[in-house]
Length: 630
Ligand code: PRX
Image (cartoon, helix red, strand yellow):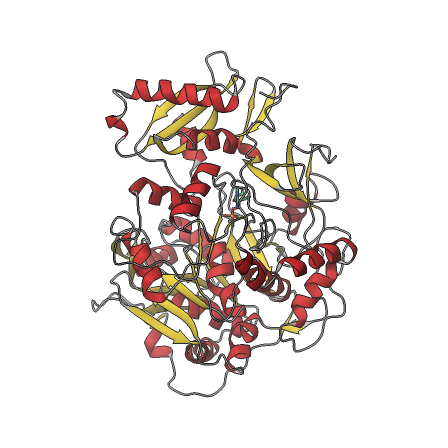
């Protein structure tokens, strides 16, 4: 325990990893330029984003970089500018020497794959765009996409955006009732769906769920349901409403020019995956989002046209939108999109796909890494993962022990492993080490050049290094949400009024002496023990360093006296019982380990041993389910 008795800085991780000199020099943002960008960010942060925007195609130049640069609510990026994100993701490359570079490699669960060059993907997107227009879709219309992961999911997003329509992806797995709420909220006129699709490990009917949702009482605006056919079985089709995808595509090659969009016109709506509150429709636009995602794809993920990136998130989630679809295409790289479980076959599928396509950048989640570790997954003898040169994770804290394991086993100690922090709301990575940075396992590094973040107390006063507080953003950034769908008041309240003058992220963090940030978890997951504020992530990090544990989660529960106490859910590794006689024996050892790691103040009072933890649809540990259970 630290001398002043606080726990904030207890779990200080001291290890650092240096990038290999060759890698740092070859990065899109090599060390000297990174230094220059950091300098520029201090005096002229907007220049960073303006330079990024200048590398892209605009139909009309912007009048200002941002309309309210002082952090006020509702800033608008590149006002006056006109562009279309798809013109930049596809047409720009089709008109360049990269026309015949691979844009998309799609891996079916069967092991077959389908490849599209930029030219071919552009042609498919134009065909569907023309079909959408012939169905009456126009600029500003909503198109709801309720699809399994298929090439048509990506094509559907790009075709909608091309004509100025707004895509709303509703992930599979919703009940008909929940889907109905999304359909109503989206005000969609067209739904793109499939007859069947892979859900978990099996093929499940999808269109019947859409039918049931549409049969509910009350009005929707849905006029057309477009169905991608996956099976040879006929399914009920409603006359006058339902059409097969392949029937609406024209064979022609006429151009379908991208619609020139105002920079702040809507591109998509996505419901935030928070398990803690009612879903919020987060709206992103063409211009700012495009610039932010492009810059982070090139600076953080270091994408170049020769790269093959596999972002394991499904396209239906924000990580998929930004770094499986738009980011890689804006950067002119090749994106690998995969149907089904990447860890099928005891994890061997992951290595097979990396080997088959020469994946160079792998962007994944701590949950997937944890599962890999649990399986003891390592490349088979005949599998080659040596094309990998950069690893990154997002979405949850990665405990230092897990970081070190992944860095060593997957990256052979040679690939930078970047822990990137961002949210559906931010649209783009905001805090992350860069390929040329020193890496500290468990830290999300510093705000990117041009991004301004701080750690503050409830009143908005900055807290000293080592202290925990609210992670806030004190200047706008280009990928920021435009608003909450249909709820501008809620937008203001939720993000701009919790702490005056800054954007409230809802996360807790601490900053160390070097200015690196350490995410402690959501504000609502903060464990307050004996007057000490400790993020559940820090206790979980300490638990994860126990050799017999594969996964652990901590929640706060009331004890018999009504005081708060911490409860840990432990998932041991597969052969834990070779080492321990009983669960009690294991728990005793874990308690002793926690005392060594955190001292006695962070006492975890209750333990439960499980074979797995409940997960949210996006794969995070569902604390809500754990709380309900407790
Ligand atoms: O709590 C933070 C956590 O995920 C939240 C955002 O989730 P979502 O909107 O689904 O966006 C996912 C995009 C990555 C954040 O508020 N989170 C995200 N990245 C990290 C993280 N927690 C710790 N470390 C991260 N790198």
